[in-house]
Image 1 (cartoon, rainbow, N blue to C red):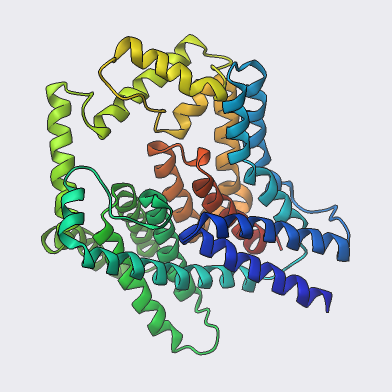
Image 2: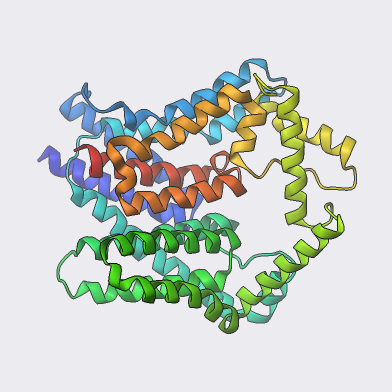
Length: 398
């Protein structure tokens, strides 16, 4: 009886959590605490677990790197705010460590919920885009994005990719809730979400999608060599087809070309893409000045601002849009190396990298960490933690 209650609480918490990832920060907060409540209930019923693998709580290391960097910061308020944002690095690993559930079916249920909620939310965004087609096309031409829930098009595209690779995993494992005929529905949802991803034309998402597609092709070639030529041709033709059929993709291409032209002219202060390059330069300068300890995560923005004002007064101040550079400048070389180890270790735990779903998921986040401060955004770190921990909990450990 208690096992059934834990089962229900966890799946309901997962539903709220995934719904929040796609649609609502309020639901996401409720989902985080619902997962926590599920784990507390599990501990009350079954006691505290003593022999769970520590890899489930390995992400605590990332939180404590940031915490320790606060010892020498001046901007205490900024440090506190960052730690609050990163609090899921404490809550979710401990919750997954404590909850007493076993079996791959929970992992597949999570993937199934992701595909269904991902499809419904992307339909909503797509219909809204069609109703305001001309206005949104104009926005795309000046570096603006199609409106999405959370007002965060990058994280939305990441969730859409998680939904796509989840559909592929369910089809690959032939996991269906009731009937094998569900595979036709899953194929339909998969294809439509790939189309939606191209319509929304988020460059980070498209880059991740094509690199994951390439990874998938390599994986399939190793298993089915005769498919190689057809798969390679399909991968090459898909972006060409998208360019000639989807106006949003063309707009993004022309904007990227214009940014590149401005960069070649040396005009780095006027466009968002070129300003990112400045933020990288400034962050690396800060690292060189405080190589071993860093400037402290709480002081990173104000130190960036000082450098910008001195070196590039005409440019807008930006955080380094690169998680690796942020840790390098904020925590120094040792903090950076420890962060890289804590991030990448789960991929090698029990050869987990051999699983194509987890390899694709990590590739998505590596791209995201190179282009955004993903772990300083509650939505980004929640995506990472929930799906990584779900995989570790139900796919490699139990």
